Length: 117
Image (cartoon, rainbow, N blue to C red; front, side, top):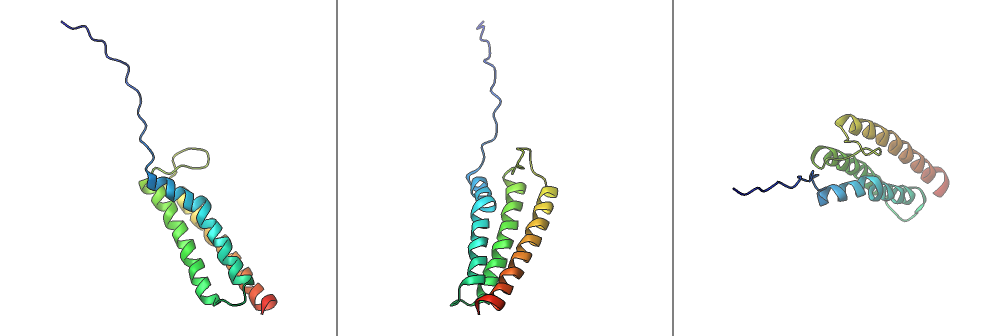
């Protein structure tokens, strides 16, 4: 009889998919930077079509919402405290993003109308 003792099994944590990393980078950093640049362009660049940039701005907001949803739903997204995020976290994020993005868009459109032109 072989007296083989089993080595203690390591607790394997599931690796974070590369898609999850890209989604997190997008909704945390890149997407928000893009919003800032688009908003700046709407408010202060003279030779652009503001309607086109407003559409890009709205599409970017929708992409941020979708990226956060996909991160939570399919890529085990976390909160800032490191806990697993839920769809309730997504709803809170979506509400805050929508309100803040809408207010910024209104402000930059007002700047364009009353200051730049």
